[in-house]
Length: 199
Image (cartoon, rainbow, N blue to C red; front, side):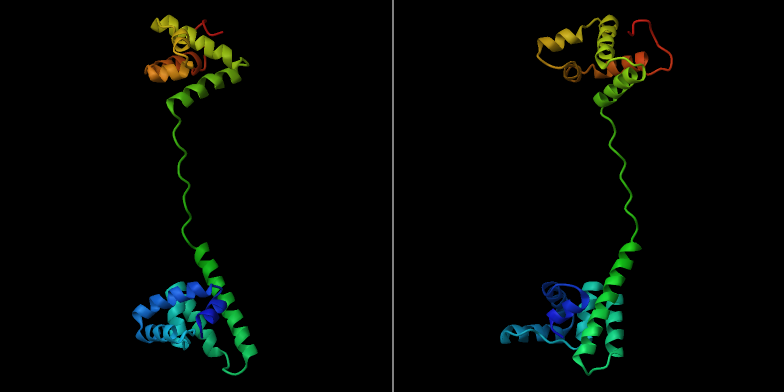
């Protein structure tokens, strides 16, 4: 059989089968010799059943090659129609083996989602509180910044505005995002309100 015929019988391209044949040729002298001879003559190499099975084994594994060999030995040598039917049957069997192999492969586990950044955790806490309590987000953020000013004696809203930055960008740059997070948890993360100051 030629590489094209092998490819048709196992549902692979002729080029892929030629790659398999080169790999098998490195291990088996008769296949290597036929490839070299075919290059010189400008013809396709013609492999016997044993060589064909070695080539299929190189690409699809021993099970597929064994199925191919068993079906080839069962088929009568005469008649192109019978050979065509055999090739279709072998192709179907090889495809079935490939599908079964994929189905029994271990499942890929989903990786864990990434952790929230401190900034996103703060946003989730403040905006979640506002949503749960029917308040607007702006009011919740304003209250947080106001409480921060009272407790840490720093007006981060004005400081951010003077630098032309958002308050959260300023807090990240000045490394006070952790303080904001602690305060937000104190104000909004508890079941009961922590102070009268939250609007």
